[in-house]
Length: 109
Image: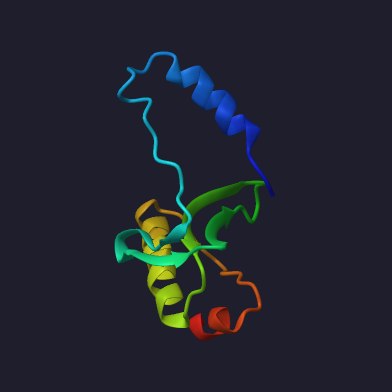
C-alpha cells in the first residue's frame, strides 16, 4: 500500500509538454464520493478499490475507486456491476470476484 512513485515519475515526464491549464488537478477530498452516484457530506475514511488481477499472467491494475465512510450491499452491487460491465466491454473475462469478509460484501454476493 502507499503512494505509487512510478505514477509520479510518468506524470512528471508527461506534464512537461502540457499547458498550465491542463496541469490543474483536483485532489481527492475528504468526503464520500460515489462517482456518478453522488457525494455526501460524510467524511470518508476508507477507499473502496476495484482491481483486476491476472490469472495466468502477473498483472494487477486498479480500475475504479471510491472514497467512502461505509457502504451497503446494494451500493456495492451497483458499482461492482459497473466494473464488470466495463470489463465485458473491454473483452476481459472475469472468472472470479474476491471480496473482504465484511458483512456488506457478503450481501453483494
